[in-house]
Length: 418
Image (cartoon, rainbow, N blue to C red; front, top):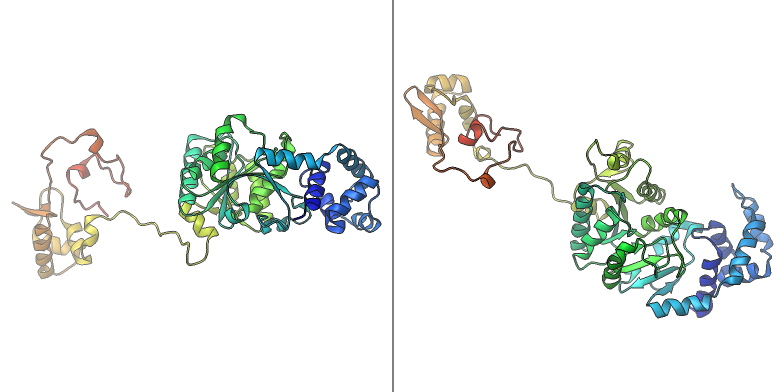
């Protein structure tokens, strides 16, 4: 990429607002150097003006040209390039080796260039990447889930892309930094500015292991509008976006809308129905705009290669009686837990023959499921030989919904299991 092209785009990045589609169309019409010449001369090309007049919402080109001209006059693109190089940052533009080609899907809203500060190659890092976004005022649950997604995605070789904000963003970045994969931080300010300032050390770690990205020139401070426009880059750089927590009105849902516009995969993590910061996720799921995911593996299954990145199927806990045959389970279900019953009564209750019942009773007794008593057979009562320590006690309710502190704690084999 020539120095003239870099300087021209650096100048236009000072002249136009981030995401200015009108400037994007001007550059597409005349090139970066031609756009600079036209703005400096104060006269836009006639064919460009005519084409803009046919836009659905025709911009006020006279007012916009005046703003561009004033900003361009005050710009010093050569100084920006020198200052960026001195700080360790670099400017990439469309056509650069490091430019992620998926950004071209943004059309006229594609960035004029990107300032990068970090050790990772942006294009290579985003080949397998997932955007993890969510609420700044995240709950402890949300921060925990975001960190787990950051760790799980990173350990699987996927890059985590996020905005570096408080809450979900920061937790996801920290989780990714715990592994060896890079993380991409997309800022709404210059790469030389740490915002929020409390994340100064986080951004430093991200530059060491990943890369910090911005379409704002050095020294530019964030504004509310820049945060919202920045979100389109987060969605465009990644192969899919997962919303961990989001209120009904939030920047995370803005990122989700960009992902849908770009036809990228969108996922959401469910949360407590009483949580306001999960209401946005639940609406995405209810409106079928997002896929429900609960683990990093499920997210990789969604965005990965078919057949290569499948998530393992969840399995329910195995119980001892799962190994019994169907007949043995019927006989076991027919045996009382108290008193006792004879083989004929058990056979009748189980609906099997007496010979089959007798055979099953022998096997169940040998396996320790049942015991012989005066009245026949009953479920075996296993009396603990020592007092259990508190930390060794099972949860009050196991995965099957049975009460494990009551009778089931003393009688691990009972008709209620399974």
